[in-house]
Every structure is written in structure tokens, then in C-alpha cells.
Image: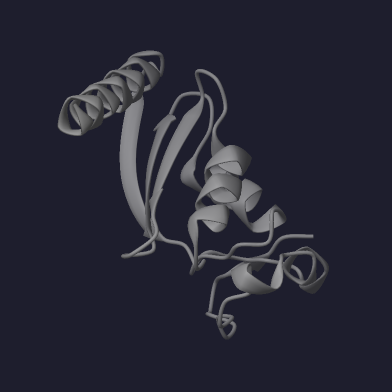
Length: 123
């Protein structure tokens, strides 16, 4: 019974992800490393960047890699990464402001990036 429930949950997640991708037209998929630590980070990162018909993000806790799908005619990777940085999480291209980072719960405060040439600090 437990294995049946696990299979049903997996199928539901797979279908919901497929449906989410189907809504984004002119989809471009990119992967980017985004700093974070835990499941709470995952929820915040994905919520900050997910936008109906524009972008969808899946962040992997273990690898710290975000798979970003976005409509390249309406937005771009920088815009999606800026939304993530505004929530307190940074990538190589967008650094979180001190204010946004300091609002994160202690369990979500990761080792911060040093300034990378060409990176932008989101306000």
C-alpha cells in the first residue's frame, strides 16, 4: 500500500511538472547554480522565480542546481535570477543584497559568494 502511494505521488508530481512546462511557450531551459541549504530554501527559490506562463524553476537541494524554464520572448535568465536574488539567494550572475540575505532563517543562510566579475547585486 505504501509503495502504491509513493508511485501515485511520483506520477502526480511528474504530471504537474509536465503541465507547468506545457504552459510556457517559446521555452528555453537553462541550469544555474543557486546557493541554498534546505527544503525551505527550495520552496522560497521556486516560489520567487515561478511565474505563470513566463518561468518555472526546479531547484535541487543536493546539487544546488536550478533548472530554469522561461519564455525567451517575454523574459530572460537575468530577470529570473534577479527575482531569486531579491528573495535572498544568489547565483554567479546575481548576488543577494545584505538586507535580503539577513532576512533568511538561520538554517537557510549559506556561505556567500565573493563578488564575481560581471555579477549584479540585486537591491
